[in-house]
Structures are given as C-alpha cells and as structure tokens.
Length: 207
Image (cartoon, rainbow, N blue to C red; front, side, top):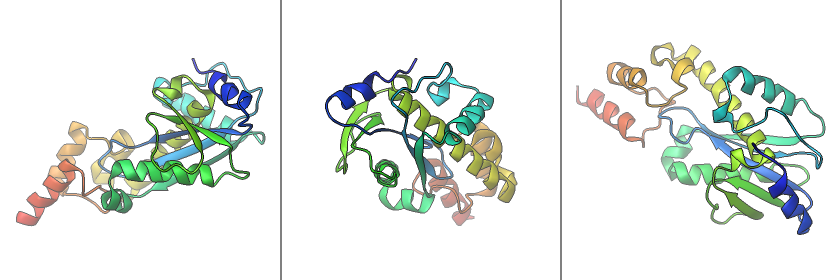
C-alpha cells in the first residue's frame, strides 16, 4: 500500500511542497494521454487509496470525487491530444504532460515524485519511482485523477463515434477495437503514429 514515506524524505531534505505525478493512456490507440499532478496535506492518510489499476471503476470514481473535492489538496490534470502524440511521439508527449501538470500548480511544488523513469529536462527537482503509484500516496492520487479523467473523456468520445466501443475498452487495442478499426478505419481521435491505426488507414486508402 502507498505511504507518505517518499514525500517525507523529500520534505526532510528541504523540499517542503512535494507533488506526485502520474499518467493514464500511454498504450491506447485512440484518445489523449492524461497526466495529473497532486500535492497532498502533510498528514494525509487513506484506507483505500492505491494504484488506480488495482481498484474497480466504482472505487476510482469515488476516490476521484473525494480527492478533487478536498480543499486541502491541490491538483491539476492535462490532456495531450492525439495530434500532439503523433507529432512528437508518445514518450515525449507524456513527458510534456508531466512538466505541464506540475508547472500548472499554484504555488509551484519544490519537488515531484514521478511514476516510472526520470523525465528528461524536467524543470523541478524530481525523484522517479518505478511502480510509484503503489508506493506513494501522491502518485496514487495522481493516478486516480489521470485515469478517471481519461476514462470520462473516452466515454464522451464514444457518443461521438459509437462504432468503436470507446466506452468499453477506452481506446486500448482489444480484439473488438481492432475489428472496428478494420471495419470502419480510424476516426479523428485515433493516433496515426501507432501501428494498428496506421495499418488500418493504409488499408482504407488502398481501397
């Protein structure tokens, strides 16, 4: 379960305000990648908060409302759209979101805990934690916000493009999604730089 141990280590080193950073949506073939930054109170604890992937959709939704509705918690979430992902690639787009989400916090954090590997050219002091969303409360909270934000966006896109089933698979390359791509070709929200999308687009252009 997550704790505040990593946040407290940074605070003891003089970094008073510590944000957790996490993303959702690096792997899907459609929709944005969402990145959230969260600063929690020094005394924060929670009996349920964990890596968003370990929780049911209903629990994530409840936690999202709880976290974003707490006046003591500062947070920001950004979405990097498919056009930008295609332009600079998914890794660079994710890093861009990780920079932007933290820089949008007011006041700025003194340091950040990032889920995964270090981010190049980061504007603040960073500590990268592999599987950080299961280690740090701040990263876990960011994972909830990023995941719920993205899922809601994909449900909205499903109303616009019902043939793909975005509300079910959220843009991930499931058999049903790949079959829909083969049948209908990509929509404006698909990532053209991703192999299955590029292949389906080529097939449609060739017809």
